[in-house]
Length: 92
Image (cartoon, rainbow, N blue to C red; front, side, top):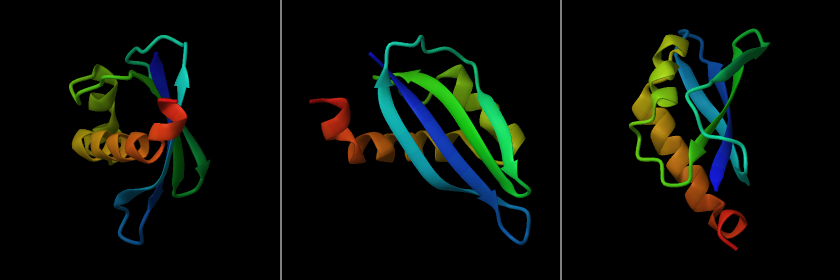
């Protein structure tokens, strides 16, 4: 089983990006290094990607976030937190 993530990020007044929402759900889709990034509105972006359920922060897709103003470590922690919050939904 893999986990599909959707992250919403916004830019503050200084132009720094911060994560404001993370959703995740189990999926049978293949985990790879593909990152779908789209600008929802000016100063707001949405990211979609798939990680293996046992991701450890070394996945190539996480290394693609710095170009969007988010550190790989921040995204990794946000994904870990989202999984912990959704544990009942992910592990019935």
